[in-house]
Image (cartoon, rainbow, N blue to C red):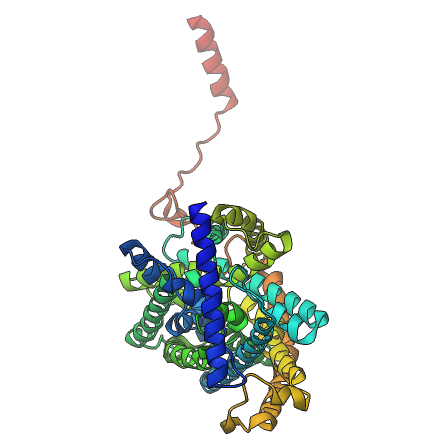
Length: 527
């Protein structure tokens, strides 16, 4: 009873402090309120023991730096290993330009999502909504601002994208570990890593990814610069060719893979909700994209320069580099990072499932973890069915990412602020350097048309064509996708010199009938 009373007192102090902060913010800046202060106030009331300080250092993250690490580490992930493959399809110039272009476009739509989140949360907090035990998600933002039809569309695209994003992480794990230990085929490694990644059910929310996000970015940074330096030291292979682009199918397949690369902000709302001050998120994704470009451009360009058209049949860049301790270290680090990214992609799915079965506000971590396990099963199954590392990125990018993080946010922003009253009472006004509301509408319209025509239209046609070609070539449930062909046994074994050096003795002459009868009489006398 004493602990219950203390918790009630603590909750009342949190609510009062949040209300006081909100009123102070209203006095200082009319039209804005202090969104997302609950977690911050809980931290102020926590005990300052060594254990709590260590937990806060490694576990409880909600600062702008935590959000930056989360965005940067989640944005690049395993796509880092497929970008050289995209360069071989696009050519060097187009590969660089598409990275810069889609990096800016992704940052813009992430900004739109953050604006819509703040708008939604501001309205709900004015209605005295309490989000201490509830994680806001993108489909709820759409529901609150635009209605249930938008909610259903956003939920369908977001969940499907995150589902296949998790599938891609499992495929990448199996593809990478094979280059260290090929005694097991890639399908068997998928079984193993599916079980390992299922342990992410024990991570409650994005609020608890502080140390993992930091380590993930360190690992990706090492791998990116290893690819660049190792390729430059290796030099160009004999007879290297850089013939891309050669076919429209390959060109748009590579373009949609880059679209997928900078479309990792499907978890923007969840990352913002984990922040103590979500208003600071506006420029975070842009800064994360700028850092990611310092990793993706040098690594992809260097690997493509060294190996050229060989990458067309090697979607994983690590497969072309010689095995060294540095490459093995890159593989291991990427494996750990893919485990982290699997958790990033799966955690929003866990939230949706918890809300569906009514366990989202459950305090028991073990109950929530057990309830989350059914989410991992279809991911595991799909990774075994479609193990096409590289082509699946393009298919997901064109069919799912194009709508989830580009078209839907841009359209939602335009419709939410279509009236003059909505624009005047908006919590966040568009910046002056983009042209205020007029410039914002022009940019949003351009994003919708470009992604719909180039990303979904041409990209969807190209990626599906390439994906079907992989199925025809390798088949579903393939045991080892793009594995080296095993050596043909030496036909000369067990004769060291080969069969052509084997001296055959002439056959012995058949015995004559007279010899047969003489031998028979001799044998009879012996009896």
